[in-house]
Amino acid sequence: MGKSGKAKNNAKKRMPKKEKKGVTKKRAKGHRQKGAGTIATSRGIVVHGGVAMQEWQRTPKQLVYEMCASLKRPRPQWRNIKGTVEGRFRLRIVLPDPKHKRENDLIFTPTETYRSRTLAENMVALLALARFDRARPHERRMPEPFKSAWIKLIASCASSAEPAT
Image 1: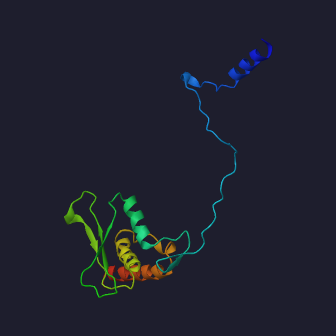
Image 2: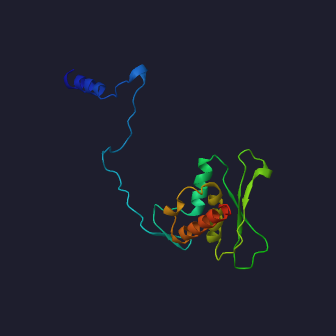
C-alpha cells in the first residue's frame, strides 16, 4: 500500500474546506497576485465642444442633469426652435414635471442664437440653473466662457429682483 495510500490522503487534504451550512468555497482560476492595480492618472485639460475644461469642471448641461437627478425630476429634453437662421442654433430646454403633467413642465427659451449646438445647449442650461440653483456658486465649477456668462446672468437677475426705492 505504501506510496499509493499516501497519494490518496494528500489528495483529500487539497480539497477546498467547507464553509458554514455545507457550502463549498470556489476559488477563481488563474494567478492571484495582490496589490497590482492600475494607477489613475489625470487627463489634464480636455477640449469639449470648443471649450477647454479641467477634469473637475462641469458644463452647465452636466450641472442641469445633476440638478434633475438630485431633485428626482425626469431628464431634461432639448428641442430645436423653428425659424432659426441657417448655420445658427437656438434650443429650448424642457424640464418635465415629476408627476408627468404637461401643463406643469418648465420651458426655458433663450433670445440669442449661437454658432454651435453644444454652445446653445449650455447657454440655455444656464437659464434653467438660474431658476433652480441661483444661490449655489456654480461659477467655481464652470469653464471660462460659461463662468462669465453665469456671473452676468446672476447679476442681472439680482438687479431686476431688487425693489425700487
